Amino acid sequence: MTAIDDVLKANESYTRDFELRQLPAPPARKLAILTCMDARLVPSRMLGLKPGDAHIIRNAGGVVTEDVLRSLIISRHLLGTEELMIINHTDCGMLKFRDEELRARLVQETGSVASVPVSFQAFTNLEENVLDQIRKVKSHPWLSNRVSIRGFVYDVKTGRVKEVM
Ligand SMILES: [Zn+2]
Image 1 (cartoon, rainbow, N blue to C red):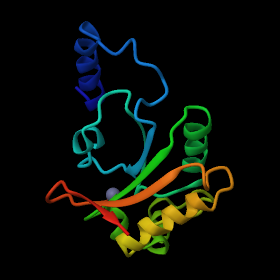
Image 2: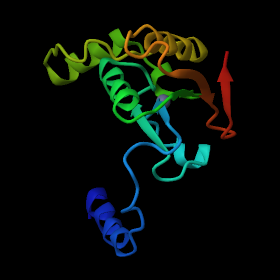
Image 3: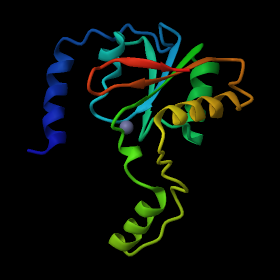
Image 4: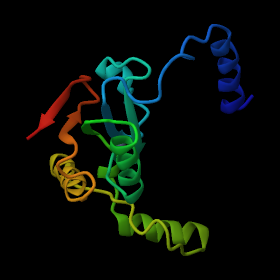
């Protein structure tokens, strides 16, 4: 059985006593969270969120891309979120390679060049990266002054979320 077959089985039992049918779409806490896709981060557990509380936007690194801006604008202007948490984390895979190295390796391995992604957005300094992401959101005219943004680093060894000032 594949992993997907496995999780589909779990979904079968999920539907048997499904309790979330009454949830409204706008997040109850008016909160959006941008974080890394790293499987060790479980935002609902680490932040005590209940279903329906927050938008959670994830990608490799928890970086602000064009698509993240798209989601944040929709989150803010169509679904009423007012606060944004950007959470990067210790031991992130994005600290462990350089864009050019990965690109060269992929060309080598696949024998093909590709125009997208333009950048993998690997980074070298966790705290600086968080601040860069905050700046990217703040510099968007449809988000600046419309959303309150704070940045954090999650420690994968302790589970603690610490604010980056
Ligand atoms: Zn990561």
